[in-house]
Amino acid sequence: MTLRDLRMPDQRHPEKAHRPDQEQPKKPSWIRVKAPISEGYKKTRDIMRENRLSTVCEEAGCPNVGECWSQGHATMMIMGEICTRGCTFCNVATGRPDTLDAFEPGRVAHAVQKLGLKHVVITSVDRDDLDDGGAEHFAQTIRAIRHRSPSSTIEVLTPDFLKSKPGALETVVEARPDVFNHNLETVPGLYPTVRPGARYFHSLRLLQKVKELDPTMFTKSGIMVGLGEDRQGVLQVMDDMRAADIDFMTIGQYLQPSPKHHRVDRFVTPEEFAGYEKSAYGKGFLMVSATPLTRSSYHAGDDFARLRDARMAKFSRA
Image (cartoon, rainbow, N blue to C red; front, side, top):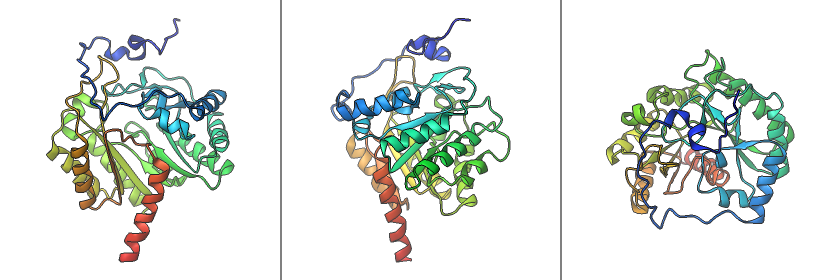
């Protein structure tokens, strides 16, 4: 059997190899970031390597990796680095994943302790090959972190558990993360081309159900813009999120990982992002992050503190 080299685009994304190349427009000045070279970045990278951990920062090609890792912040990606889905925007490798590593939750907890993280974000690939979509693995990771770093707050960014057996979501919620995040990614009309393996209203209902299971748990979701949506579509997603009682919304610019990925429709200006932020706060979100470089985990620790303060302020006014 020939091993895949995930550094090669056609082997990393076999489902995209047949797609015609999409032109990659030049990034505007407000998108560009510096190359990661700091000592803090290297220390974080070394801890990830020592514990044989994957991060969404690297696998998804996040533009903020230099800034976040220089501060010792990394988003752990559990359950391997190969996803069973083939979303057209995503740079995570697609294919048949390896079996779960039973020792991974412990290694994640060790890395969290060594990095001294006050707030940690745990995400994963989609694992449609598992009966529970990896829900129990999430729960074990949460429990392991709680054991090693009891004062750390935990945010999970989960798959949609679309093909999982009943009870998967409950398994994660019962492990009591502080924040439950699941990204809608885009407006519903773009799902067939951008997120073909997912269902918009299933993802929305997942987040709504978290609140039904535990009304005290913070919920969070995000979308990208620049995929071909219009302003009215974004405002409708905001309304849908608020109807599902989602507390925190993130909005960031889509960046095309390679010519085989979904094309960038346009670069949304910082002024438009500011307008989206104002609209979202007007609709009742406790917390909004809307900038070109916003990503789900960007400044997650600081944002969690602001989220908590916003809830306290809301209760004090009631």
